[in-house]
Image 1 (cartoon, helix red, strand yellow):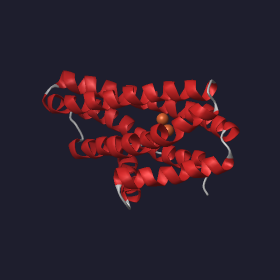
Image 2: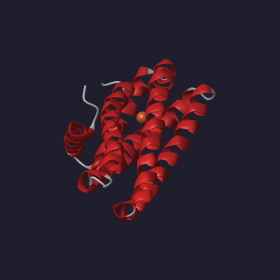
Image 3: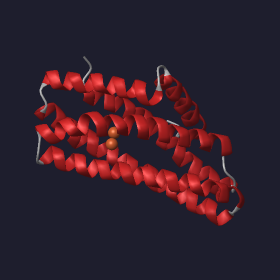
Length: 186
Ligand SMILES: [Fe+2]
Ligand SMILES: [Fe+2]
């Protein structure tokens, strides 16, 4: 059985590519003084469905309850903080989506949107770092291997429930396209 930490890290690699595309889109918006309409819409759909509902869903529904029990001080505190980060990201994505119609027609709204995209990518990058450097090691230290196996099984169920069968691969393809168009060139 795959380690839950490895499953999360694989998701993080995709999310980081998405964030790199968002950064590129923020630069595009400022340079071209217009929105990359369809691509921006696609990227937000990935942020909502893949990054939030599915990935943050796995952490909130399957991992955080276990780590809070297995590590009531350090683990539970981390789970609380990371959950409130997720709520802040959800709110920020909602705010940006509401801003899109105005940003289509108004320069000032475009500047605000570009700035918020930058805030989102910066904060989510930090969040992922904390999970990889602190949360995942704590999971491996304080949760027994058979329970970690159960968490990985729950991750799979959450993926099927939130996105449906085969959706993960479809989102990865969209992320690769967006990262190819807007992401940092290696
Ligand atoms: Fe998270
Ligand atoms: Fe995460």
